[in-house]
Length: 185
Image (tube, rainbow, N blue to C red):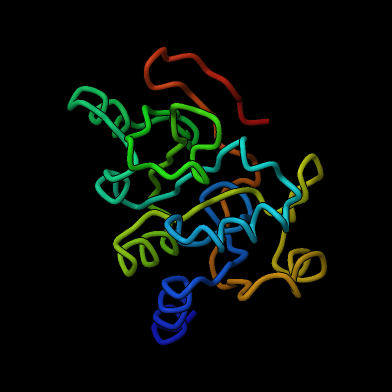
């Protein structure tokens, strides 16, 4: 993807676009987390109830600061290397929108060095909403072609030119308890 196309994508996301894109794990749907209408579109596409909450995917923990309440020890823990991409359930700040955290007092965040996410998050100075590219309970799209066939008319962009991880979802861990809530299948 050219720098011009990436800049166009950042601009579109800042104006409410909903995208299908490759992440560090699987294909996902994404948008600006502070745009409730874009988040509502993703939930509608997925047929997912809003009370479940969504993941914030970011290239830098600092981009998530408005959504979370962490002390320095917790921040250090998130930066420790893990065997698998890890999504952390962390205490949500009072400013974290309910359309992101759902019915929970925590918010799910994952920090990644995926090149696409690094570019988009830096351009937006923000994390992205990230959720698997599928209807709730169904298999995740495994390619841009599958994504276009299943959801193309519901998305503003399908991003190509970047690889996903190993097509397994991230592990999910509670930052406070250390409990593993989902293992990568």
